[in-house]
Amino acid sequence: MTELKEIKESKEGKVLEPVKRLSPTSVNAWFKCPREFYYNYIEKQKVKPNIALVKGSVVHSVLENFYRGYKPNLKREIKRLFIKEWEKQKNLIKQLELNPINLIKEKRDAFRIVMGFYNKLKITLDILVKYGKAENERHAYYLTKPKLREMYIKNEDLHCSGFIDRIHEDFDGIVTLGDYKTSSKYGIGLNQSYKRQLGIYALLYENDTGRMPDFVSIIFLRYGEEFLLEVTPSLMKFARDTLQETWARTRSVDIKDYPLKEGKLCGWCNFQHICSGKEEIEKQKRLDKLKKLVEDDNNEKSKS
Image (cartoon, rainbow, N blue to C red; front, side):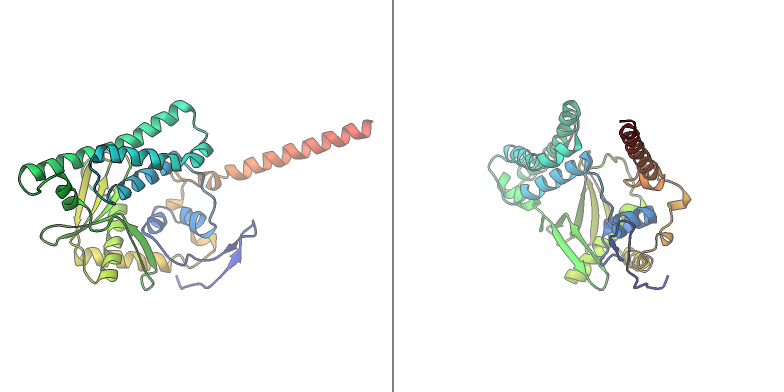
């Protein structure tokens, strides 16, 4: 598709224009379903908050702040950080209107993810001390501490930007980029969307630092699993080709250029109510109800 410089208005009067910069998330959205990409990044439809996003935000913030510096009681510190970050989300949580039982369940689930991370780290710290790799827990903490907790990178030539959750460099100078996930996935193997995302992070990092990372990884916090993917020239080419293709195919603001994936509704999507036509049906029901109320009111007035 040739690049289109078009700008127009939606039915709601909002100005529509192509995205100015991609991200690994938006690229995956395009490959998952072009129509979802359109609603999210072109029309910028509002997405209802959900508890999964809240938990993901809390967990990411806890882990980022946990590595700001060593505290004598790491277990107590990570618990304190969790309470603090959960409290920050209280206004958003109220909007979810969860019943108290489900809210407690979800909070406990987020806490288990955080404590699962700590328990695994604690084993590593103890082993480092036991086998003489570290003098004490403090020393071990700084040995395992990421080189960078979070790194924002953008590249105008690639038309892309993103946040890398952690960057680790080991004793031999091996650099690994890590991406935290709070999803329920477990078991071996990485699907194409993970490979796509990791490849883009590696490409952004190389273009920013001039050094190709050795590995990229997905860290599934819920089950304490980490999947490594070696960074190779073929992975970098795959990432570059993916970005170029996505950029070229998202220059339009015409919904016809963003078809449903395989011509059918996705099993789960924030915009399924629009694609299925339910939104229009509900809107028409509200209009019919309002029209009837007006007619009834007019009838009552004419009788009097």
